[in-house]
Image 1 (cartoon, rainbow, N blue to C red):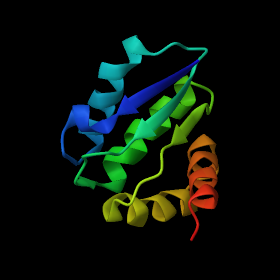
Image 2: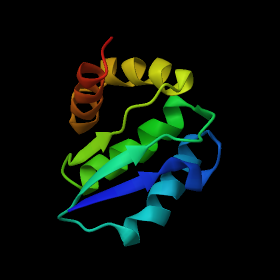
Image 3: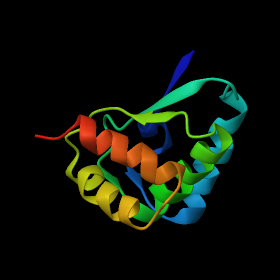
Image 4: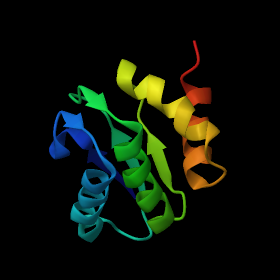
Amino acid sequence: MMQTIELKNFGKVLVSRPAGLEAFNAIRPTLDKNASVQIDFSDVLSVTPSWFDEFLTNLADYLDGRVDLLPTNNASVLAMLPVLQSARQDFVADIIQRFLKQNQG
């Protein structure tokens, strides 16, 4: 089963670690622990590395890495992802690497 998380439900501008953790805690009760999820960046204007790191780290740990990022042209997201990937060696890095490979060129 695949669930989609629409980040726009948390706002158009996503900033700060506390807000990222709050977003994860809000969505966690709706998640099927055995499912996979995909993250949709549609209609989000900006995402900071700190918000996304906190949100994605908790989500990836909770779902044992079964997270995919949907394609996006959002410049904020595309700039932030390689920064996060380079700082990590865990589920988060794997998720971002998979996204970047699928969305090259």
